[in-house]
Structure formats: C-alpha cells, structure tokens
Length: 280
Image 1 (spheres, rainbow, N blue to C red):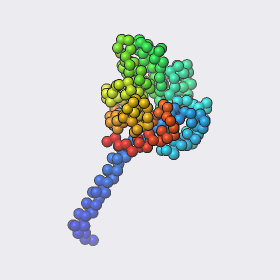
Image 2: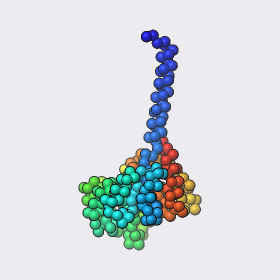
Image 3: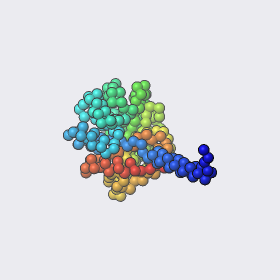
Image 4: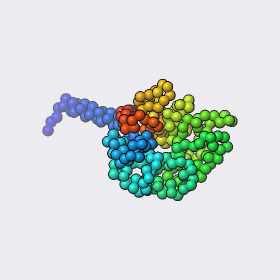
C-alpha cells in the first residue's frame, strides 16, 4: 500500500494536536484540587437532627471527605458504617486536648475503627495557657502523645485560632513556640486561614518557612469588615495561598464556616467555588 507524503503529514499534524489536547486536559485536572472536604462542625445543628441526611446532601454536592468533631452519640463502628454507606472518607477528627489526655487508648481505638489518619486538637483556653513556659510544656506533651500516636499510624495535629498569633507577656507568639518545640515527626499543623489572617499574619510566610508541617487548611473567607463568609464571597486570595501550600506538602483542603446563615447553602457555595479553582 502506498501512502502519500502529504497524507502522512496530515496524520502527523492530527496526532500532534490530539496529543496536545490530552496533555492540556491532564494538566488542567492536575492543577485542580483533587478532593475537597468539609468540617462537619459547620453543619452541627443539621447533623444533630439528621446526620444521615447531612451525609447524603454533602455527597450530592460533590464532597468526598469530612473532618469530624464528634461521634454524634454513636459508636465509632456505627459511624464508620454510616460514612461508608455514602462513600465518605473521614481523614481526621477534632478532639479536645483534655479528652485525648484522659483516654489516649480510647482515642486511638476510635481512630483505628474510623480509619483516621489524624487527630487534631482544635483549641486551648488562652486564659490558662498565657505564658511562654506553659506553651513550651504543652509542646512537649504534644511530642509525648504524638509519639504514642505515631506508633499506631495516627498523627497528632494542632488547629489554630487568632490568639496563637498574639504576643504573650515576653513578646513570643504561641504558634511560633509550637513550631519551635514540637517534633515534626510527631506533630503536624492544621492552619486555619481565616484566623491567621484575622490576626494580621501572612499565611504564605508561615507555610514557606515551615515546609511539610502544614498538612491541612481550614478554608473560610473574610469580608472587608473582618466577618466570616463563604469561600469566594470575601477578600482572601485562596488561589495564591493554596498554590504555595500545595508545593509545601498540603494534603487536605477543608471547608468550614463557624456560624453560617444557612449551613447547606454555605458549604455548597464554598465547594462550587473551590472545585473550579486551578492552582497552576
């Protein structure tokens, strides 16, 4: 069979541009956030009434991942069955420092049954932890607990509010004390982008200077007046922040709103905005 050179040229051009199209499509997919999660605290009132409906609704929106903050008066096993029914991955839970200390083995048991990778301390009482020495002691206890957790393939992490970026009497910042005194092998950080920005600090600087330590972010937007709003409805440049964070080890993108006017509408608005975002 004889094929003309002109035909070969046409075929070559066709395959070249077809290949370019495939590569472009793959690049676009790679630049998008692979999996968006939601902190169920945002939907706490709705979940108290009907947890299964909440899981069904967020699945329909497109969420595949959640961050827990309670077991909803269920055993870890029953909650796991419910999550599996809707094919939702619970990668982490928030649990208070006091509860973790009181029952480390119980916390690890829940984590194992639920398939959690992280247990995250959501806050501390600033009235109690008001000196550098207390934050240093807290950091060392996190190392102790984190080492126990790591032996069971669970990582301990800490979630910030704004007060960790406010100077103590000696001028030091609690968040800086945590970063300096906790061991990265045993303690990770979840950076709440709203609160660090409200505190007047630069999240990108913290992310770049602590590469690999910030494995999860809470994503909620801020209006000009400083109030909280849905992602994309405020002033925070999430694309800029998340693009940098991805390069420095960010794994989990978690939507949250502390006091939404309508929780279902809030998490859908935030999801829809993030789903279209390209981090290239």
